[in-house]
Length: 487
Image 1 (cartoon, rainbow, N blue to C red):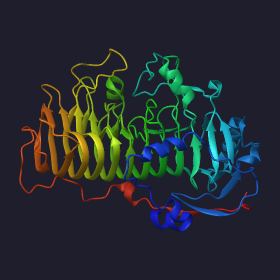
Image 2 (cartoon, rainbow, N blue to C red):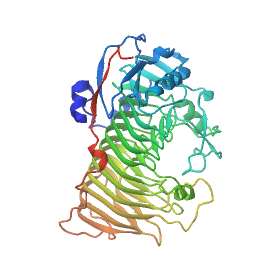
Image 3 (cartoon, rainbow, N blue to C red):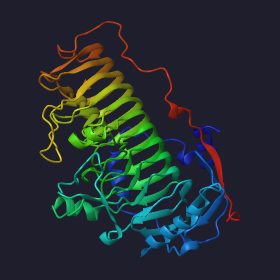
Image 4 (cartoon, rainbow, N blue to C red):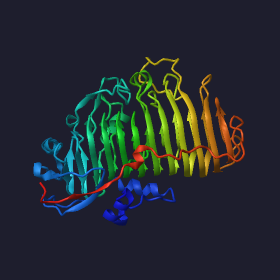
């Protein structure tokens, strides 16, 4: 059974589509939701049988309460999660195992997943991230970053809430259960410059493959929400990701030095980029040299007044290539698909294909910059110039736009091969220069308002979009079953 068919059969209309709001006023409703959590029922070790779609099914099952879990929102369940996962890891070679999180509020610090494993959150199950820093182990910095983030000079990072490394065949899913990062504690420390270590992300999987994240609501991450890094064969779909629009660095989905990624049917309200494709920064990313590539993004809805719907970079020093973005929507968002890079980044952003953008209330439609000056330290090579080429946009409709484009390449290192076709942009006010272009080269066709002279008109041109399928598009979902009598 295909993913959409399985989704409709199992979950019905409540999760069969991602909501598409026609009015920016929808932001207000979302932010009101963030202030409250649904009161949940009493946890029980006896659950009804249920089905769900996944890339792989499991032979064995257990419930968090079987390992001492207490869903009162106050008792720490860190030991319960770790005990459950350690116990279930013995079944990795015997059909794998699934851990069911039942209705309740399950307070926990960071915990690590295992291979051939499914973490399933039932409806009205809420995983609450602890605000006790002792429950967040410290890890070495990521090789392609070299230093801590958040302005912290350290060789340590906080572990994410849900973490794993060197794993295969991992599923994190549910019947729209919730993971609440309780990020306000970390945001306040960040804003007051009180952090001694980089903030944790919500979900981070490293050096792993065959990953599925789906059918969950994620709210209030301390920093980035979903961060697969040095990983491959990833499907991320059906997520609702919510953070206040002024929360710092709450990126939604950040594939980082990843290959073969499918991101579909997600709804994101963020204080930063809804999706950001990365591959390490400056000399550290250049040394690791692991690109993000073969990535497809479809049917995304984004609200992010201070950032991008999809960002490429600024950490792109391992390279970014073969990214396909189609049928996406942004509302009250600063920019659509933005390229961010700088002198010292090196590497490349190339073969980027965008088709079908519906935009409403934007500062910029097209935005590229070669002067994104954030660096982890002064050790970057000023001769390491990024190569930006083969950037294609087609079939764009935008309303209530402040500037059509801000395209800034690098002197002596222009951004080339830019193609924009069939784009209609309605400006919020008459601008003398709706397009601002420096150090770029390319062509346009059937674009209004008239582009800058560096992007001359070429009649009857459709910018490229690949007709072949990426390997990840062939990954199918199975219908998996939880049966209370299995384990």
